[in-house]
Image (cartoon, one colour):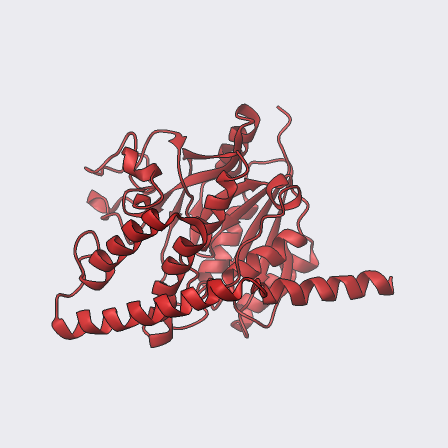
Length: 344
């Protein structure tokens, strides 16, 4: 089997031991041709982690890039420009992998030429209960009462899909609308032939940046394929990771709503937007299932204020797109790469 080369990209921000463990699992893959690229946005690591990363980079086991800004979509774009793989695969910096993980992704591209992206299954510690007798979610003997064979039709409807897509409990391969950012891969052609990139205007934890990207993939005619065999365990650390601001800050709350509005305004029809924004209000402002947020009047009012402010910002940002595409980190990097090329 002529397996495609893979670039494994790990953006990281403020992570220490989980990053090291994630890289260790990536280095142990049973795969003949792959590279590991770490885009490091952490200002300063612990001495032992700094030494570990430097040793791996010096021995050419990883490509380690230090950057002075924090942006998850910006880090993804930065790494793609420096990658060589036929397949671009993104991981979070707090995951656990089995040795056959890369093969599980790669086989889909060989078997299905219509597939442009693969969404892997995520055993999410934050969304699945611990197994009995202390077994982990990644254990083959893990028992979980909630299993889904095929997602409902609503999961392919962009207006409401985001509340029906479950890549945690779904057990059958199938076409899906989007992938989860901690476990997703793409044909290189999407970046080079079609010129797709991750939108750097998605900030905070960059929630919905992968959904925005996947909606644009579908415009190329390629499909996004979910393969539960390409699974990993997402630790879901509460600190660090790719958040460029604290999750409890006002700024984070506004960017959370902003990212949802911005994705919708960019990609959905007016009717789809109305349905999406209504569901966003019902779930994340009023706190109804599946969000289950506090029903306190003060908290609902606070969330509503964030909701309104975020909509205004997102609408303004979309209008600004006419003269400014917002790719500030990529623009800076491309100028830097051109200057190096001219000097050489």
